[in-house]
Length: 215
Picture 1 (cartoon, rainbow, N blue to C red):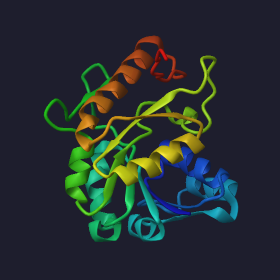
Picture 2 (cartoon, rainbow, N blue to C red):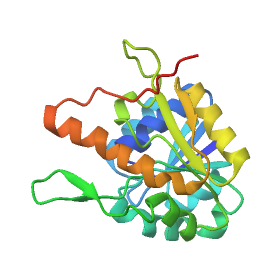
Picture 3 (cartoon, one colour):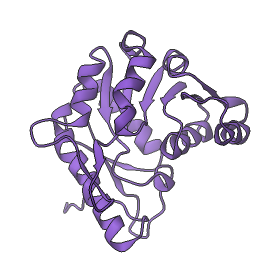
Picture 4 (cartoon, one colour):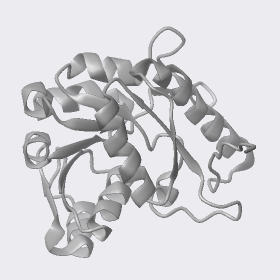
């Protein structure tokens, strides 16, 4: 499968490496394709990894991933071209965070809306699925925790798209909790704030969530 990732930071590179490891071809979309950090990533990814513009990454991907800082998300989608993403599954990894006075982030969108719902409005033809936003990028691919595989919470309006993303999560080493329609991002994104708040309070970044059930 060809995967176009909109973004080129740590999250984009971690997910891109995961896809490449599983045998997929990946193109990172960025404003700075000649950056040293990206040349290093391409070298490590080998023939299955490449870098281009946002538009090139969107056109390349049979499946797309949105992995930008929230402040640049809307513009990245404009540069990618909403018509180019129409009909494609778009994994939304973003979190609508903004900096608080103490330096830690807080939610910029919430309660009656979510970042994922905004993304779906910005690219109405895409099949947006929220995923991979409740863990740090070092643990996105094949997470190793003493309590067993953690769970990834996902949501989106298209059931087949959620199935596709759920299968990707499982191939990345995650359990999957499907919360249904895109409006459930109103709860998943605040869960990312729980992850982040704990990280800032403890200065530790090696944690993830798991839903415990009784049979």
